Amino acid sequence: MAGRYRSDLKWSDVTAKADYVNRRQLMMGAGAMAIGGALAGRAQAQDDLVPNTWEEITSYNNFYEMGTGKDDPKRNASLLTTDPWSIKIDGMVDRPGTYDLGDILRGKSIEERIYRLRCVEAWSMVVPWNGFELKDLLDQVGVQPSAKYVSFETLVRPSELPGQRRNTIDWPYREGLRLDEAMHPLTLMATGLYGEDMPNQNGAPIRLVVPWKYGFKSIKSIVRISLTDKQPANSWNMLLPNEYGFYSNVNPEVDHPRWSQATERRIGGGLFAKKIPTLMFNGYANEVASMYAGMDLRKYY
Ligand code: MTE
Image 1 (cartoon, protein in one colour):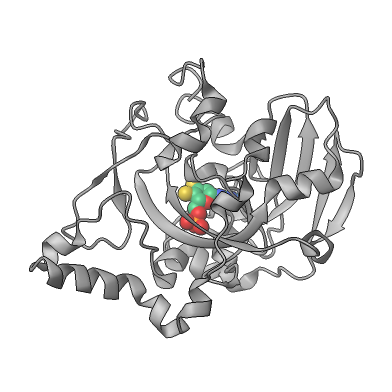
Image 2 (image 1 turned 30 degrees about the vertical axis):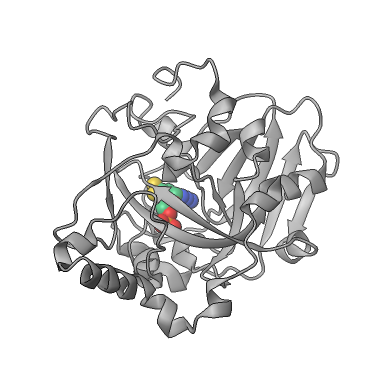
């Protein structure tokens, strides 16, 4: 099953960094020439998984711990120390403990996964992540039969995370998944992108990536994972419960109370880029829709 998502080839194996950093521009340029117009060349089809550039992925970010502006995370990124790093794993597990990141990574096969990332704010990117399935880590610590959910917390360290000196969010940033979502083979613990270590602004040294859910579920810089039998609190739901739910599956048919979710703006598309249609479950419906069979997705938004 996992093999279906596995990719043996990494960008960094086949391309010099200078090339892949510019790859998107090159490909868009080529497309534009082929159809004879720069503007038409920018209209990206939704299923065209052309990764965004390194520059785009690392300079337009949401990471409130590093500030609320899109360019704050990059500016404040170097303040954060990510080595040493450990993750406390507790709750309904057979082997609870504080695990050093090195011990977590030992024996894990790091794969490349090229996933769409759809922010609830209606912009999107395509990111070539490197990481391992969360399931592999959960299996390592032994999930007990009573566990139904997984909760996650981000580091709290205001001395290095200037955004945490303000209470925009009740820190730590928290997120949660149902256990079947957490065990799904698409759910990734990402440790890098484009074959490089994860940049701090993208959630170094390790973050969650759940590609069929709005980006805020993909919690960054994780220091705690707990197995529980109660639905965990998640930060955006705590802040604005009428706007952000627990499930937060990408759904073009259920609008945010303040804007439509039917379309999205692909970052890097240029000034004249058309919005592209948002896909159900962000294009991963074949893989994940069965987990929500019979659920009212308007109620469980
Ligand atoms: N994780 C933490 N700890 N703090 C945050 O503010 N923002 C979320 C998510 N994870 C956020 C977070 C949101 S809203 C999005 S869209 C994605 O991270 C953005 O990931 P990126 O900056 O790597 O594109």
